[in-house]
Length: 374
Image (tube, rainbow, N blue to C red; front, side):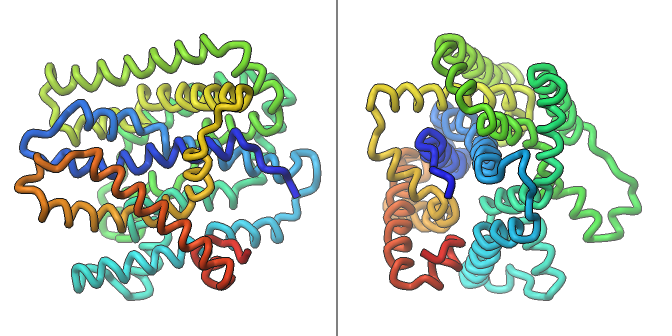
């Protein structure tokens, strides 16, 4: 059994804080007088979080499966579908049942509707991540070949080329993607194009391969974090300034609305992509520094241990918290954004702890909800 890496595990907790912030931030935008500074923190500066999970996944895969040993693809695939595929289907059905209960008739239950919902990750706004992750798993032999090629040629040059290609692909797919009018007549083909960001793994390939390189060259990765901590920090701060200045420029000079700014500065934009890479290096460096100085926060470790279920369940609690606070406060503007945020975080964390404890007594429940039978 591969020993777990504490640094990478604790990175999950930081990522989870960002994911909840992104989703909690949507409630700020509907306010009559939204706090734009908190909105920027929640909806713009938290955008590192989803791509960072692909970095963690890339690390985990290449640590678990030696690059130069034969991959038994079918057993590997069964294991990955058990750990991610089964919980994905179960949680998707739970969310569909929930939305059907809240808004009767809003869910299509025909075989075609269910297939489309599951294929594109449309059961809930947070769950598309698992679809992309499954495609990363399915195409794992391709990523192994890519990493071997990078190592045979030149890792630095390969990274630069992959970085540039990633920027180009993301920019093209976000701004210049077009298709023939006849495709609109075929619902499934139209959805294949419209929901391309929900299932195509190529938009996050660079950060995934960063994780793969961190796994196969872990000591060198730590050396970079240790020896170039100030440079990593400066890179991170520079991208924070870039994202912040762009946010206020679009808000004050271009007069974009908040949703348009979010779409412009999302994680696949050039600024967002740079910020993601910088955040990954910075947070890894901070965690490494904390580990060396015995400064690990127990709260982050607890959050990291429960990050999987928190990720899956927090949209449900966000709905409940927003509905409750809307009744308690006179207007949406009166609701403190951080009250929403921490309420969702605490409720999701508490539920995860309960589910994991219950799962120890009911292995079937654990298997369905987490992909683990113990």
